[in-house]
Structures are given as C-alpha cells and as structure tokens.
Length: 75
Ligand code: SF4
Ligand code: SF4
Image (tube, rainbow, N blue to C red; front, side, top):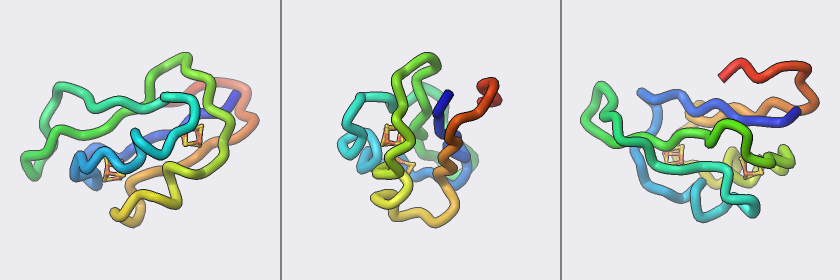
C-alpha cells in the first residue's frame, strides 16, 4: 500500500498538498500543532498512488514523507 505521513509540527496548514493530491487523500485536521497551525493529515484508507505531488508541492521541507508499496500502514 501507498500512503504519506505529514509531520504535524512541520506543517503550516497551507493546504497546497490538499489541492495537489489527485485522489483527495489529504485533509486538514482539527488539531492544532505546536506552532498554532491546523495541520494536514492523510486520510486513512485513501487511494494514494505515491505520485509525490504532495511532497513536491509542500513548501515546508521535511513535512511530507511518501511511502510506496508498504506491507502495512504505519501512520
Ligand atoms: S503521493 Fe500523490 S496520491 Fe499520495 S497523498 Fe501525495 S499527492 Fe496524493
Ligand atoms: S503543503 Fe505542507 S505545509 Fe502545506 S498543508 Fe500540506 S503538509 Fe502542510
């Protein structure tokens, strides 16, 4: 399976990755991170194709990690 993990404290909730994802795999959660932003999260079970568009579009280096062909979800 493919999925991404977004580091809550590296995300500034800009929504760029949400708009970039072709399969609507990402949403803004309700929780607030350490620096006061609502952060984005992967929707568990969403059909991620590991295209990397979220990773490449995110302006915050290190916020998004893409996992491809994993046996299990470790989000
Ligand atoms: S890797 Fe592609 S399909 Fe998966 S969450 Fe990111 S943009 Fe969406
Ligand atoms: S593009 Fe990056 S900073 Fe913006 S919401 Fe997505 S993970 Fe957070």
